[in-house]
Amino acid sequence: MFKRKPCNNILVGVLRRAGFEGRQIRTAWTIVMRESGGRADLVAAEDGSPDYGLFQINEKIFKNESWWDYDKLLTADYNAKIAYEILSKKGTDWRPWGIAADGKSMDYSYYDGIFTEWQKENWIRKPFEKWWKEFPKECRKEAR
Image (tube, rainbow, N blue to C red; front, side, top):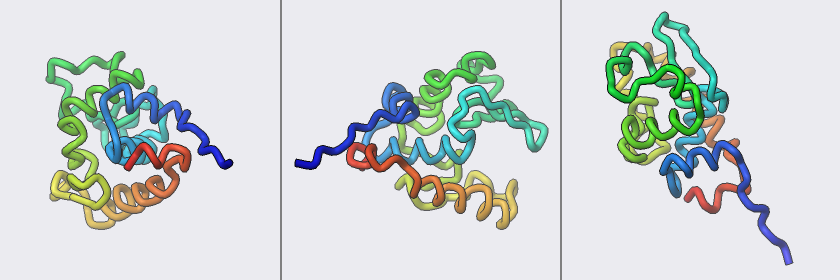
């Protein structure tokens, strides 16, 4: 009898611990891979405003929030917990990353007036679709 391989993906485990469940896990995993390539310690500042950790949480927008902590944001569990509890409103609002409430289609409203159409297409939609397809097969059953 064929036995399905268990989902042992480390990033999926981080997302589960943060609170994501079901389809939210696949959406969150896809966003993380698009944003940071899964690197918890990544700081990127392409536009002069640094983004931190797995979900690339923006300093300019959030640095005055009570939960803002430079060091903690560069840890996988803390970054994912903030993304889950606060930024995605417990996995129900993906607009800060250009994704609609369904977790799969695009919602660029957060980026209107900030990104060009080319940027929305090439920095949000295309990478998201690429990583959506690359979500680990052994984890798909639990991420529905």
